[in-house]
Length: 382
Image 1 (tube, rainbow, N blue to C red):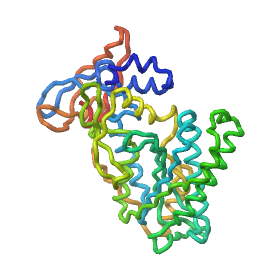
Image 2: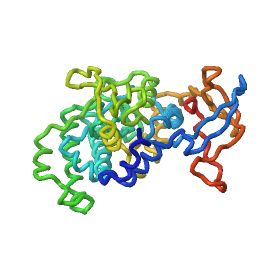
Image 3: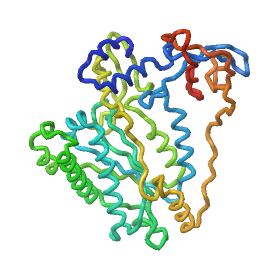
Image 4: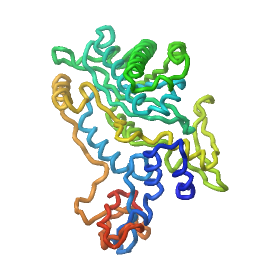
């Protein structure tokens, strides 16, 4: 579908150069355009072609390995305490600015969310300790509309000034009041937004009239889910959300007659599953809204979970809790040999190690091209 509309994508004036480049990469993913490897199954001997993947973080086919590695790294950082799932959502009146200045608006979303958690965490009324947070940016709704929000994982407690672990209210069953979170989050975000406009990061003429009046008129949505009691549940949750994109392949039901039909949830009817049909160009346009800005970090760590301080902070937290460092048992063993790939074998009907026999250059390349990057070493490479 992307290849079919490639010329229209290139001519479209509403798409940025970065969005066009990402769409081109997705169109070429696992095709002859990126080259391939000729591989042989080490169990049955069948020889087949494994096309190279684009490894783009906006691609639905190329996130499996990154997700596994990231989740395994987080497994060693879990504490034996409940974890809360918080969601901070931007109101829809900010959508026009998000389209023009996604890096700025999404950056402020991270900053205001952590400010809210950190400020309330240090307040003795709620916790009185330094907590941590892992925040993951999602910009989409189930129907591919623009819906910027953060999924945040926050441990039920933190380290106080004496280095002792303080549990959240009701022994980890309660973190912060939703109403208080919403007010602090709104006040901080609006303050940061005013500052960004004053400093010229956002052009004054792009600000919709009456924007700040509308922002204070609406109640900002903050969501606090019941805490996860088992660390494994936290790990499963993080793995599902950490490297997801706007729409995955399994949600697409059909592509026919210039129409794309996919499943989505109708939250006005309690999350009821339904099918939505869009013409192909509208589907591409909506998908492009959620391409991550160039070099933008969409997964961030804060507080005792930040990269700068987590090594000492997590060890202090384990000492205070009397806990050992969790053992990491990888769910998937990765082949170590550089000439071995884990691929799906059509003969065996499952993922098996494959030996690389030959390297096939990209279809567009000339005789002097260098060797292409191998496909991802996962069961998804076909």
